[in-house]
Every structure is written in C-alpha cells, then in structure tokens.
Image 1 (cartoon, rainbow over the protein chains, first blue to last red):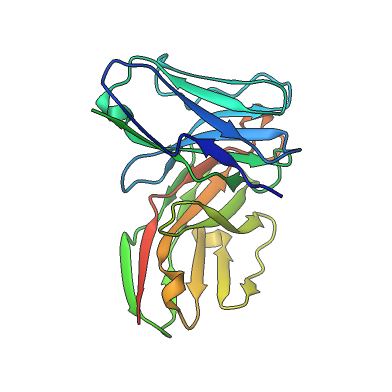
Image 2: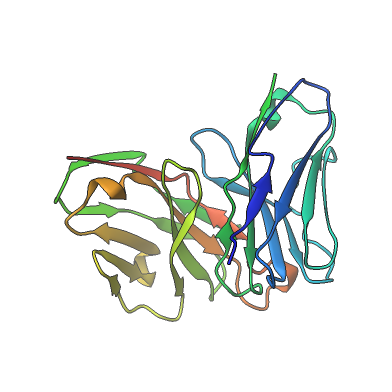
Length: 113
Length: 119
C-alpha cells in the first residue's frame, strides 16, 4: 500500500505570504502528526491529531501556524505571514493508533525568501 | 520536560567497521517508549525500533543491535560490519507515556548523528 505522501515537495515563497502544506496519511491510520526539521537539527513536534479528539497543538510555535484534519483523512498545515525562520522541512507522519510506530512522509521543504 | 541528547554530531567509519551511536534521554515519566529512526539522503525517515521502558533486554536485528540501560538513561545503537548503505542521519526519540492523555505518542527527537561509511 501507499505510504504517507506530502505535497508540494518543495515550496519557495516570499516573506509575508501564506503557505499551505498537505499531508495524505496511510489509509486507516487514525493518528497524524506534523513535525518541523530545521537544517541540521532534529525534528520538533508541531501538532497531533487522533481520530475525532481535539488536536494536541502544544508544539505550534506561534498563532501564525494552524492545521486542520477532516476525520481520518488529509491534513493541511497553514503558515500565515511567513517569516524567514519558518524555512525548514515540514514532515508529516501517521500511525495506526497513538501507541503504534509513526510512518513518515518525504516532507515539504519550505524556503522563505 | 523530556529531552534526548545525541552527543555525536558526526561519525565517519570505513566499511566493515563496527560503530555505536549514543543516545541519552531525560524524562520524569516512569514509563515511556524509545525509538531509533534512520534518515537516508533521500530524506524520508525510516523506523528502526521501538523499545518500552519496561523491557531492558538488548535487541538484535541482523547487523543492528540496541543496548538499553535504564540506570544510565541510555539507548545506544550499534551497527556491526557497517556498509556504505548505512550512511544516513540517525535519530533517537522518546515518547510521552501511555495514558498521558492526548500528549501520548508525540516524539521528542535528539539532534541526530550523521554517519558516513566510506568504502
């Protein structure tokens, strides 16, 4: 079966513009996660969705960041008024449930000029 | 707060050498999970292992082995007879405990160790 997919693979934007990143989890996976990986760094947790429960937004760095997920399907991470420090690879992961291992997508490389 | 430290930023070895990647973690939780992920040049993270904090037995999978020592809060990863294809960034990670409400499952990652295996 297909793995986690993300689009676009690369996004270059100008400072101040809004961007939308998309994640398609593995079919049947109830849990979905967003992480950010800055150059040469580890991954930072951003947000976590589990089924129809309220998402865990504790990792979102500012109110410019938001994410949505409808049911157990696609998720969208939106960054408003992008800043240069938002430049990073944004990784999405999904898992069968919240105690199973996470499978990661290829990421979206965001560059803010 | 949880923290994962991978003190080795970069390691360079010659093919067939054994190499150990260190991971030290901090948590106040009595139960937790530890993970290792591999990130090859393609960028996609590959799951390698998950270890429950209750299980301190070492694990071996082919050329890979893991040494979990709760007394020293370490979860080290050894590759035996390294190969060029092992070249990647390796991440150690820690998750919040079961029953931790909605926080359970999200991973705290170390900074990663870049492993380069030369032919």
